[in-house]
Image 1: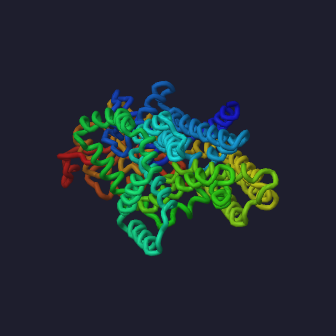
Image 2: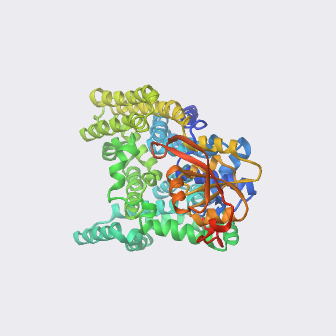
Image 3: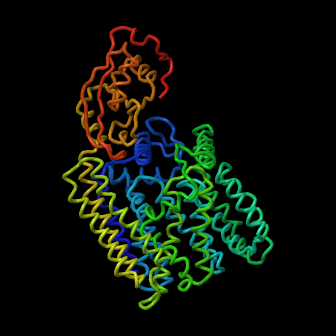
Length: 584
C-alpha cells in the first residue's frame, strides 16, 4: 500500500505543477471551465451552457465535478483543473495497484509513473476536459471485464463493470461501451481461424470504412462474433458472469435520471446534438476539420504516447512471459481493437486512443518484469524509435520559445530539453542491455522534463498570455451598466476571464442588434477583426478604447485585442443591417 500511496503523491505533485499559474488554454478548456462557471452562476445542475447558449457536446459528469470544485475553492484555474488532477491521480494509483498485484514490488511504482509521464495523459491530467473523468471509470470497467473474460470474475467484478460503464457514459457518452465492444471483437478475431478469402473480405470492409463508411462496417463482424459467442460454452459463461440481468438496470439507474431531466429541459435537443452531431457526424465526417490519414494514431503515438509506446513492440512480443498468454492477449486486444475502431472514425485527435494507454503500460511493465536482471535486451527497433521520439519531444520547449520570440526563456527551455535529450541518448547508448534501466531511466527523465516545462517554462510564458491581460484591462475600463461582448471570438478561453454574462457575436447583425437595444457595450475583438468590421460597417462609429498585446499560447504567436465601443447619433448606422434578430 505504501508503494501505491507514494506513486499517487508523486503523480499528483506532477499534475499540480503550474496549474494555478498557467491560464486556461484552448477551445476545450475554455468551454468546459466557462460552462461549469455559468451553471454555478445560474444554479443549474442539468443543462450546460457556454456564453448563454446550450452546450450539448458532452454529458454532465465533468460539469458536476468542476462545479463542486468551484464551490469549494472558488473560480480559478486550479479549481477548474482539479477534477482532472484527482481523476488522473486515482487512475495512476489504480494502474499501479494492478501492476504490483501482478508483477510484484516495484512494478506498481514503475507502471504508475510510466502512465503519469506519458505526454498525452500528463497534459490531459492537467486540463479542464472530460478525458480524465472518463478514463478512471473506463479503466475500472476494462479491468473488471478482463477478470470476467478470464473466468476469475465474481459479482464484484460485474458491479465494477456496470458502475464504471455508467459513470463513463455520464463523462463522455458511449466511449467506454465502445471500448468493451472493440476489445471483445479483437479477442474474437484473435481466436478465429481465418480463410484467405475471409481475411481479404474483412480487409476490404475495413478499407471501405476507413475511406468513407466509418465504423458502421463493423456491424457485420460484430454480428458474427455475437453468434459465435452465444454458441460457445466460454462465450455463454462470459455473458452469464457479466450479470446483465441486474447490470443493465444498474447502468440505467446511473445514467437515466439526468438524461430524462436534460431531455425535458431542452425539448430533446441535447441528445439530438450529442448523439447526432458529436457521435454520428464525428464517425462519418472529419468534424471541425479534424480529419487525418489512415494510420494516424500509430504515426503520432511515438510522440504523444511517449515514453511507453517506444517499448511496445518488445513488450507485445515478450510480455506474455510475465502475465501469461491469456492476459497478454487481452491487453493486446485492448490496444488493437479500439485502435481499429478509431481508424474507422473519420474525426481523429491524438487523445482519442487514451483509454487504451493503461494496456500498453501494463505490457511494458510485464516485459520489464519478465526480463529480470539478466534477461533479454531492448530491441534495435525500440532503440531507434526511442532516439527519434525522445529527441523530437525534447526539442518542443526550444521550438515554443523560438516561435513566440521570448529570449529570456531560452535557459529554461534549454535545461528541460537537455534533461530529456541527454537521458535518451544515454539509454540508447548504455542502457539498452537492461530493459528495467531503459524504461526506468526514460520515465524518470520524462518526469523531470515535464516538471520543468509545466513548473517553470509555461508559468513564465503565462505572464504574457493575451486573454488574462485583455480581461484585466477590460475590468478596468468597465463602467456601470456596461455589457461585455466578444466579437468573432477566436479563443473560447477568453470567456473564463470576463464577466460571466459576456455575450458572443460572430456576425455584424448580432452586434448591431445589441447596440440598437440601447445597451452600453464594451466590445473585444482581435485587431484584424476590428479592422474588417470598420470596413464592413462604415455607418457606425467604432470608438477604440485600448489595444492589448500579448502571447497567443494556443497558436504560439503574438497577437493583439482591441477594446472598443459602438456609438452612433442616428438610425442611419443601422441602415442595411437586419436587427430584428441577434444571431450570434
